Image 1: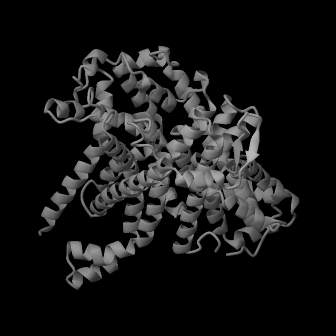
Image 2: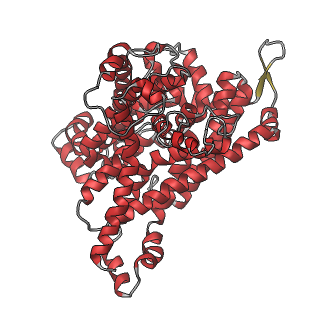
Image 3: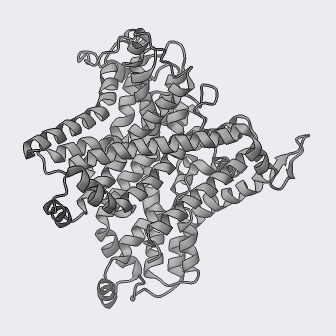
Length: 293
Length: 277
């Protein structure tokens, strides 16, 4: 939609967009260009400077079993975290949408975890699942179950999945509840009159009507699981044991800042950026063109 | 099923959900009042010792295990969260206002070049952004902590949506009254967007307060440790962890953003679900 009435002049509007454009240029386009350039260079063997190597960093990465394993691990992680966080949130939202007593209080009590930092959620989980001090972790070991996420890769993955999903439920809950509330009561009533009962009514009427919300949340959850969980994972396991919880962002960080392999780390950044751009494009394709209207 | 039964079931499920989220926080709250040695032995109890809040003044004033005092970390986090929220809201209002209420050369290009940055979090471009910061000498500075994080499009898009919905008649009336564009921005546009500004403030404050990866990279000086960074450093100490201090710090780290969300819940929920769709 274009506005009919506008103000004249062009100097003022340019001054108004300038701060944001400048920041975007310096902290977005410049780094992005630098990432693309660095991803096609490598450090000279004698440390004398950069050498242009074309797409070598990319082909090396894709041939590296460690990188491929990290991609697979990240996909599994993202899918599990999103499914858990969205499933639980949807169930809670359906109940909170009912006309029951105290529903306002329930909403408040389910919304506040939105404020908890990803890194902090893993510290909360430490006190539950740590094999030595954890409320559950210690009794488990006392009962003879070998529970130690510091040593066992699968248990480590399970722990970071739970901490990451736990933190994201309230965000999803807010959106599912808003989605449910925007469904006209008349539609639900009509289904009720036609004799559609609980679960069937949800499956055939409510859930399809929630599709836009679900799709939006799927994209947000995948991006959250892929990137925002750096703090969760780094605080709890540092990507370990071994590399069992090392997702792509942790690998970019480790290769770039700890191992100082700038070429490879930049190539990984470029691949991540392309991934996010693809997801965003997909979202706008399916979500309609709200932005450009 | 009778209606009463269904209600009972809903209460049970919601109650379980509430406990699932409250319990870990309660555990940390209770633990912060207990003896560190007892916690290390595995005797963490869900019952707080209401006579012992000594861990709080201890960490606030002195820090623990070689860390900065917690009051200092809280201050850094507060400054960072406020600068990110305030800075991003300010630049986004200005650019959205220009794009919606003016026709100027390269307007479309300006809009799209901001829009492209929508979904790209700082996490995917850490290495190159770091080297740009180094070029500007912003490593280990407070400015370096927050400025790069305000360069993103989410807030701009939200304000654009809000501004587009302002009726043309209002603009015409203002022009007939002889109000210039800056006056119109200050007297009409900003007041009518008050609820959206409040909602964005909550979202951005929480976003800023909870940052972890960026401060970890750009500020290695302990004097710039945020509360989240400081807390994670504390659990990294393998031997002799002062658990009640860690738990008291965790409580202090989550209190401010939770308070902001709860106090501004009404605007926050409306703004979040209207804006980001």
